[in-house]
Image 1 (cartoon, rainbow, N blue to C red):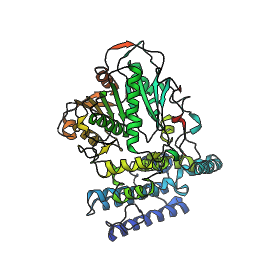
Image 2: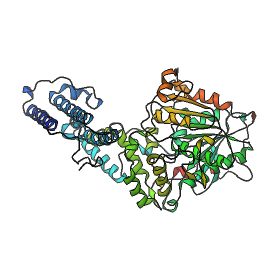
Image 3: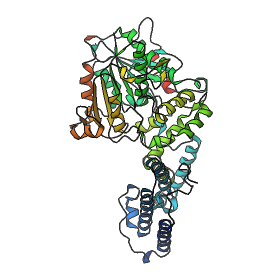
Image 4: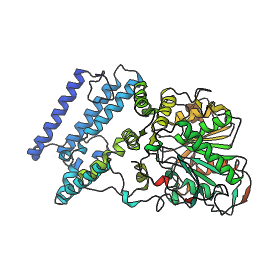
Length: 537
């Protein structure tokens, strides 16, 4: 078999000689471990293992038995990776096998097993076995949840200590609620800001805590902020299409914001797939002869899906066809399954540390708002998800003028006349920054590109007061590499640069209205609304 999705299959790059060598090394390391366990005084300390935080704690270094074991594991892993790199495979196949191999090697780590983890042994001895009892309790609790806990779920409640910016829901339909946030300044720009967050996550990553809320920051800069809160869909919404998200979601939100504010146009912001939806909606409006956006901000968004990183390696005709057959005409893409895929991309950050600390050492995960949000799964309608997979990741049609028909009209991203601010994160493992950069060449208006440090979330959520990281700015170039070569590094957050740019498109200052909504769209309930509080079934 040669299927990279089956880690137990015999890979086509397998060579008997390196395999035998690796097996011999493994036997030698295991023999040394158990020999030292039976006769510790005879053990000699090996060379220090390669730098790896899984084995950085004192017990791994002080005890030659575990130092030998960790070093053997690292050597075996390196040998297997080198064998794959030397294999005569095309880049895509090699990438698929690399992903599968990494899952196996990560799982094989001696740190993940009670019998071969000296830290877990020490915790058990120090606690008189209580850590093992607590670890078993945590394991059973996670089995009941169906996932590995990364944060104390009881420490947070949406609307109480996360997603607390004041505001009101001023519109709702079966797909979304529209939140209008209360002003914190006496005057606001005439044109409001409409935010379209990803529909695969809850919106409150943009309003996590008061000191790191992009929503609160925009409000404080004098913008009337409207935000789409996507519904965590259930079986009754399982037939919704991509076009529904464009029309009932994005275009409806823009229309309501215009009606309430009385503005000629609105500023718009889309994050991740929310940006893909937003650009699609504005292109649909353009095909209808409308230009409702005064500006377009895209955060870590793909419009050209020619290089989608490791996520793209999991998408091929067979997998998409299977999804279409199972949920393409109705059903749900469960948020838990999506979360598992994203976690697997960084298993040594998002899976195994919590297994080790929780189940082996008996340490409950601490309260961490970002990881609480990360575990708040969101379902997607099957037809919508399948359209997205086929037309973007698989066939990359969105970048082609007229390549997709959405809401009954051919879509051309170059027909969007609004000036655009395109942001990407340099270490993003979900939206490679070079891919985000290619989107600048598809839009019809003037485009500014900014590259931030860190990853998909930490790069975006970087308030100026924290004085963290840096970002790069520069004039557009022929490609991402040429742009970076001439870009200049700027200290701190990219938010102030965006705020300055946004103000030039937001219109004059007017007195802030203290009453949310209007006669046609009265306040329905306080922010953050009901939809964001619904847990995935």
